[in-house]
Image 1 (cartoon, rainbow, N blue to C red):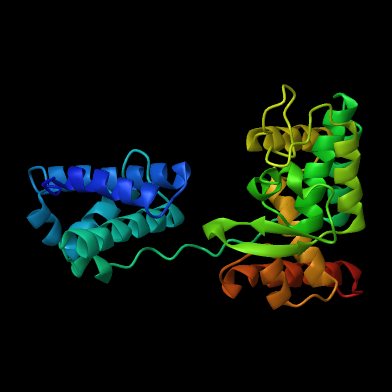
Image 2: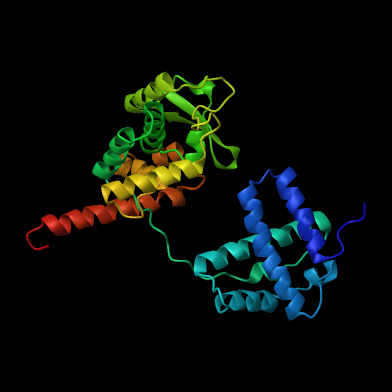
Length: 307
């Protein structure tokens, strides 16, 4: 079969490559498609016609800068972080054109995106984390559902898991031992220690769960027996934080942030926390040092006589 002729055909070939060879998630595919489709639509208007393979090889740094500028001042302007994500997707598309379709373009790699302000994780404090776990167990749901929600949140806070990682556990993982093997982003696996409180919370749920715990089936079940969805966990925490009067930043992922910052505050080193969280880069984990430093400075300012 002949290769792609137009830019949009090349986009479809790239999507197929990401889906079947790189095994990208549906959310990643959707994000990349949206970013590159907007870029190609701009080129079609900016350069007066649908772009061919030859045209893509001739896109200049000025063309790409014009596109980024247009996204900054449009009806729905993008912030620095979103522009950076769009630029990353466009570069990845051009790398595919170069390596797989023989259409190199060095110009697009000369463009630098806007510097995004460094984001700082927003964890909940220890009392707030404990309050979420306690409130989950005291919900108006059936006993097994309340135990399930508490077990999931305990995994997020006690093991530092992402929602997807907690919900990926199967019946074969129960009962939990001293460690649990987690497959995280990029299909990377890591061993995470399991605290007795986490082990007990999961055991309480399993004992009450009315659905059979099949080794190959999901450990956490929805009301009708299917796999529990991330949306349910998010909605649960949203409801709990409303009852507890917590800020909107109190999300399921904030429990993972709290796991890291509370370990750091107790003396754990960044490299160990990196391994526990499954971060590919230490720079990602270093953000928690800024959070802990800010907490210490705040406590100092409140407690010091001259504060």
